[in-house]
Image (tube, rainbow, N blue to C red; front, side):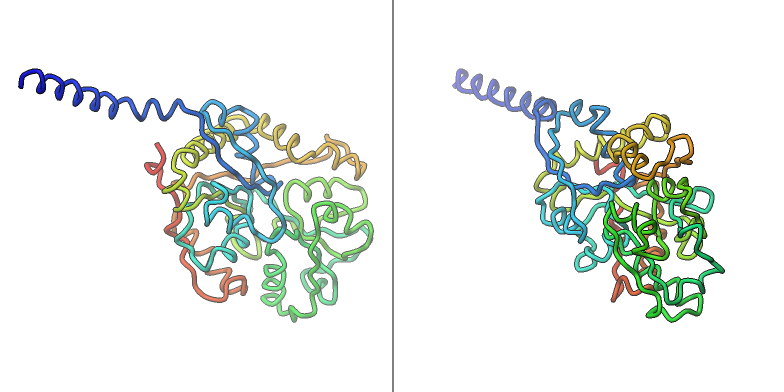
Length: 332
């Protein structure tokens, strides 16, 4: 009997040691995760995490996939095919996720403001501009990976212009750079960094700096990085490690903006873009949007943003995303 009790004690002690040590063992094991991203400045935390080796240090092997133009990355994250997505236009995220808004967990948002504008309305230097009325009857280009066409119509309507008389044309990343000079569009709503590069061109001028910031909201939530409840439950380890790496990357961006800018240049291929437009690097006034971790954002800001989207008919019914902000303690 004593022998049996001794064996039981040893087994219980071994189980206790395993329970205590298991989290450490688990954290040292490499895991894999899938990430979808939009090649946009708003995905900079992802680029920094990759470039600075934060994923490697947390032992998570991340497989990167570039997103298409129709927001399919939102569905991939919702159903767990991808553990996270970065750089998705906020309006696109809300539009695609409105069927089940509580399925998501927002990791961070990128923002523009009046003091730090990231959107510009541009046209050729030879084109006359006399305020928003000049958009009537004109072709206005916008990024195909966003819902900026709806914002343009919304702004036109608020300015007393028939929105149907403003023709919005989607532009691919390459078309954004050439649409004005090739006269495919009369005006262009562009974002950082393309907006800043185009501004430096001798053929193009800015007619409205901070276009969305001034006419939609300030601060203006540009894009989001996010995961889902499904990922937190079924792919917990890779998802949490990805979130930790992204949070470290945001700290790096804040503390080293110049170095972060160089990483952005590398991943967004800024140098080759400037060569195409015959723009000198020193002539480009580069700025970064502000990156805010989910727990630094007031839920009311998310609600205000979605209310605006309802007004702009990006949303056709109310959808509450204010509870999607990931709490700091959810990932330790």
